[in-house]
Image (cartoon, rainbow, N blue to C red; front, side, top):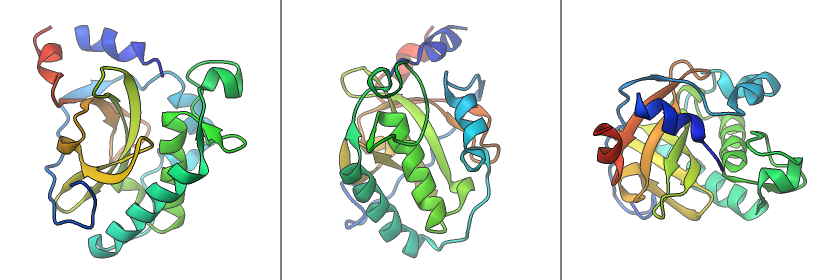
Amino acid sequence: MKISFLACALLGAASFGATVSAAPLHATRAITAPEGFASACQRYAWLCTASGGKMADADALAVIDKVNKKVNATIKPVEDRVVYGRANYWALPKDGRGDCEDYAIAKTRALLDAGFPGNRMSISVVLDRAGNNHAVLLVRIADGDYVLDNLTNSIKSWEKTGYTFLARQRYDNKSAWEVVLAGPRAKQFNEI
């Protein structure tokens, strides 16, 4: 996944079965949404709406874990160029295939369908442990932000992923994005 907008803009618990806690991921300022996100909002109004049900954190943990595993098992990882003939096409998976942001969109839809509140979910763009662009779904519960990732069935606090978080959807205004800069490589962006 190529997220070149972000680089330019920045230049100006193993699982829920264990007791873990995560700090919330704090934002610093507004930023332009990733390429492909705005058109996804036009196709899927629910993706950019902070609506949804109410769910207690105790109930949410099991639902989040189930959705992450089910979506990961259902979708085959395939790049947008292969599926759609172009890069950065944010969409629900097509014919059971999609790339990282497509997994995140599918998990958002599944969690909304299960009654999880939309204002507690946020797609985030990150650098993975190898420094590659990647997208994940963040979910916020009382003790912090957790990551649903197509690369693992484990739900982890954002700090435990080894990822550098660059930007995310705002929780309160889902069509807007904000810089977060947190994780192992965040300092290199703060120094620029």
